[in-house]
Each structure stands twice: as C-alpha cells, then as structure tokens.
Image (cartoon, rainbow, N blue to C red; front, top):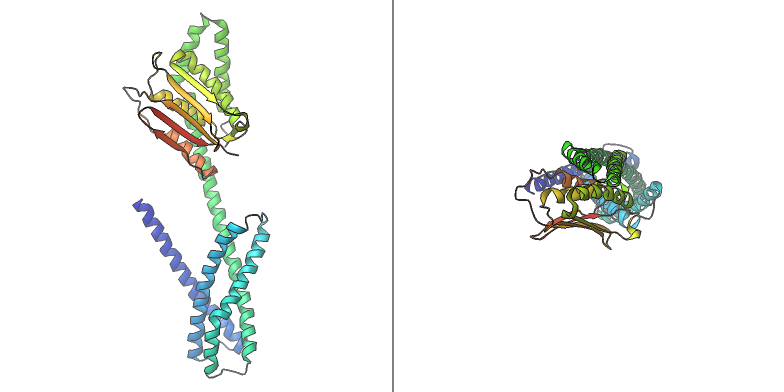
Amino acid sequence: MKLASLIREKSNKETVKLKLVSAVLLSVLYTSALAFVIYGSLFYPVSHLVFDLTYAFVYFLLLYEGYRLLIIQQEKYLSFLKALYLKYIVGLLVFQLFSLLLVFLIGIVPFVFILQMEPIGKIDFEVELRLNAVINLLFSGVYFSALTGLNALKSYHKAAVNAEILQKEIAQAQYEGLKNQVNPHFLFNSLNVLSSLVHVDADLSEKFIDRLAKAYRYVLEQRDQELVPLKTEIDFINAFIFLLKIRFEDKLQVNISIPAEKLNLYIPPLTLQLLIENAVKHNELSKSSPLVVDIRAEDDDYLVVQNNVQLRKQEFASTGVGLKNITNQYSYFTPKKVTFQLSDSLYQARVPLLT
C-alpha cells in the first residue's frame, strides 16, 4: 500500500510538472501570435508583455482543467454516442465555448488595464477583443485536438498492454488447467481405476473412457478461448465429476443447481475445474464425512462454488497460482470482484457470470 501510494504521488507530481511546463510554453507561443496579429510586431513594451504572459499562463492552466472536467463529464453524459467523431465534435464545441467564456471572464481586467497603458499602435479596442477571441478559438481547437490525440494514444497503448497481459494470464491459466488435468498423478489414478473396472464392469469402463476422453478433449479445444458458455463448462464438469466419483465413490458429492437462463452466460474455461480440484486437494474425503461441493448461480449473476471444510491433516504445498489466475483473468473482463471466503465449516468461492 505504501509503495502504491508513493507511485501515485510521483505520478501526480509529474502530471503537475507537465501541466505547468506546457502552460509556460503555450503562453509564450500564444502571446507571440497575439502580438504579431494585433500589433504587427513581436516586440512591444515590457508592461504589455508581462501582462499578456500572465494572462495566457492563467488561461492555459484553466483551459487544461476545463478539458479534464470535460472528459469526465463526457464519459458520464455522452456515453450513448458510439461514434468517436461525434464525441469529438461535441467535445470540441463545448471546449471552445468554455475557452470563449474564459477569454471574457479572465480577459476583462487585463484589457481594461491595458487601455490605461500607453497604446502600441492604432487599433480599436473592440477589434482587438474580436481578434483575441478568434486567436483563442484557434488555439483552443488545436489544444483540444492535441490533448484528445494524446489521450487516444495513451488509451491505445494501455489497451495494447492490457491485451498482452491478458494473453499471458490466459496462457498461464490454460497451462495450469492443462497441468492439473493432464498430470502424471491424475493419469496414473485414472488408469488404475480403469484397470480395476475392466475386470468388473465393462459398461462402466466404457463410460469411464468416454468421460476421460471428453475431459481431455475439452481442455485441448478450449485452450485458445478467452470465455466459454457456462453450459459448455458444465458439460465438461459433469464428465470431470464422473471421473472423480468413480475414484472416490460416496466420499464425494457434487450438487449443481443452475437455472436454464444462466447457462448462456460466460465464464473463463476451466474455472470450475480449478475450484473443484482445489476443494478435493485440500480436504479429507471419507464415507462417514463426505466432501460436499455445491455449485449454484445466484440472482446477481454470480456463480457460487462452496464446500464443507475438513482440511487434510497433512496439507499439500500450494502456490495459490490457480486461484490467482482466476482473479486476474476476471479483472480484464469485468469490474466485478472474485471473492474467496473461508470459515471454520465452509469455504466459498464467488465468480461473476459474464454476458
């Protein structure tokens, strides 16, 4: 938290510094343009120069703050405008109206004061005011376009970085899911179960092979997908649960309660498999005290996976990478939070269902 606070503080200081430096540079450029257009010369009395520079500096500082507030309000009230050019046009018009308002609000005192100074040339005050307004409109238009372009580049860069991070997270999650599913220990146990079944129940052996193939096929087919329908994930989970039930028999109970209207919502692939594996890995399973896993969808479009807690006496070493990957993946798709809660008797995971 302390490091994050220091980073934010440093970023804020850099923003303020950039704002001040740009205001100074733009003030010099603006004052030079104003002097040349109105007076026909870049050289005029120091008293006029100081006053114009001060006026321009304050103007650009306020203009920047106006732009910042405009962007915030634009996202709030103009989100219905899908076309970017419409947002740009509306934003430009509002920004230029704001710049004209600034010209007259902060320009009245300077112009009245300048009238008391020694005139530089023969020019009517009203003409000067109109020229000043035109120059302000030109500068504010260029300024708005430059800031909008800069923000667009920043947004594009941020989106590209986030997309790259997302791909890495998805690849990592796919690797973890594949590793958990296709690890030698799991395969060894599955083949042992199959070996026993072959001599006892040929029909059940055939079903076991079918579910095992279905589970592996799902992992391979979905490894390139960012999201899958919940129905698809549930179909895979039913095959996966079948394999676990053959191995653990009555020691494991899994209850799934998903309304039909929720099955078309989306979830990152292998999310449920990771959560069930997590429950089996960390808890004791016995006929007298079976592990009970409940999977249900709630009205707020959250999927809940919960189980009774009966932790193993000898815990497996766990890095927590699987659960962390679930959280990280969801952070790129939705602001909704993934939550994990552990009490003395119950462990509950809540993950959002996406549209």
